[in-house]
Each structure stands twice: as C-alpha cells, then as structure tokens.
Length: 339
Image (cartoon, rainbow, N blue to C red):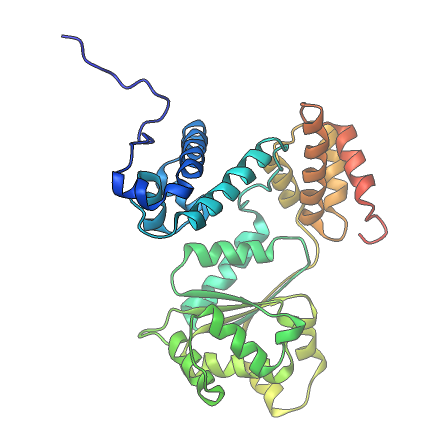
C-alpha cells in the first residue's frame, strides 16, 4: 500500500480558506491579507521557523498572529496586515544585506574566573566586595554571565545621571522589579526584595565609580541590615576613594565592611590568546597583530571591534579574514591615539 509522505521543506504552514463570515467582514482587506499571509509562510518555510518564532520575530501578540494566519481574527484586519507587511519588508531587505559579524559567546578566561569567584564569595557570605578591572577585560560580560547562571542575583548599572542616593534607588528598583511610588518607602521595599531567608542574594552594582559617597554607604546599609552580598564593580576610582579618605565614621564603616578587593589593570596574556581563538583566528601573523591590539587600552574590546570590522571587509569579498583585513580595520577605526 502506498503511503503519502509529506515532502514539503516545512509543514505546518498550510493556508486554509477562511470561513465565509471572515471573508464578508474583511472584504476590503482580504486580498492584502492573502498576499501578506503567503509571504509570511514563504519566509517561515525558507528559514525553518515555527509560528511561535514568527510571532516573536514580528512582534505580534501570541494569540493574534495565530488567528490572523488561520483567518479567524475577529478584530480589524487592516492593523495586523500593516504590522506583518512591515515585518515582511524588513526581512526581505535584511536578506539583501551582508551578515553582520557577532562577538563570540561568553569566553571563560582567567580574569572571568577570578571575578566569578569574587562574586560567589560575596553571595555566599553576604559580604561587600570591590572589583576594579580595567575597561575591555570583560568585567561586565562576566557579571552578566554570573547573573544569568546563578539564582537571586541582580545586576544594576549606574550612570552619571543615577549617581545620587535617590537615582541609585530608582535604578535598583527597576532591576529588582520593585514597584513603590512613595520615595520614603523605596529603601525598605528594595531591602525586602534583597532579603532572603538564610541569605544568598547578591546585588552587583556596575560602573560604581559614578556613585556619590552617600549612595555607597546606602549599599553598605543594605548588606548590613538585609544580609545580602554587594559587589561594587568599576574602575580604580571605586577603591581609591577609600584609600584616599582616612577620616570620617562612614568611611571607617565602609572600609571595615570590604571583605575582598579584586584588582586587575592589564589583561592576562592567556586571556588575550583565548579571545583571539574564540574569534576563530589561528594564523600566527594575525594572532600577533591582534595580541598587540589587545595590549592597548580597551584590551579585549579593541580586538572585538577590530575583528567585527575586519570580518565585514572580508565578507564583502566572500573570503576568510586575513592580515590585511585586520590591518585595514585597525587603521579605519582610527583609535590609535585614544588606545
């Protein structure tokens, strides 16, 4: 007996004829709907995307896309047609563009291990730690990775606009998903979120050099009262203010509370080598050039930006990245005087 086998490249994107009620209700937008639906199906089949994936990529609501595609949507068809038409246009335009090179996924380096160990110490002991690592070595990426792989970890980034006590509290509330409109109760609400029975929470405060002294003292208060770990992460200024200030009760309390200080102002040679390998570079000549770039200010970040541009140059000629591409990328970036 012959058995029918579905040989289509991707099943699940059949386009059934809608009910007559749908046709009558949306007569003015029906042809537009048919055309867009057909294009959506073609794109999905070509890329192997499910309906859930198309829903996510197009930005449509979960139930809305399914009803729109099946021809059962009860609302205004014109609005959804427009949204999906714009998405189809964007996908088609993007297909004609060269693929933008992306950075390697998280690379476990020596410094990332040291940062992770320091964060873990703070979380396990409800202590206050300071991490001062030069720009481009990977401190923020490591903090994000630690947050993603450990429970009860929060990661807030401070800017010059959120450096005050109130500005910091608002930023922390956003990160901790705390909703409190009364400013006088904000500190208590944040503390309650950081408190856990038996401890075990960690608050990572990135770019902490931007904080005013009172804001840092407020973080010390969270650690003392609510038994949570606090990690101040930033440049050398974070720690130097404690060394420079020798007087004052607040500074004495802060200095006493620092359980560990991790400091690294230059990248490890092995970390530079690991990051170059993560970019897929094995040619000795290219490796030497990238190593020199990685020893400049910005470290691994300089390698990353240079390799992205070099990859775009090589991609234009449909070939692998070579020494001339890296040289051209570094020259075109024109950051030698800033590095």
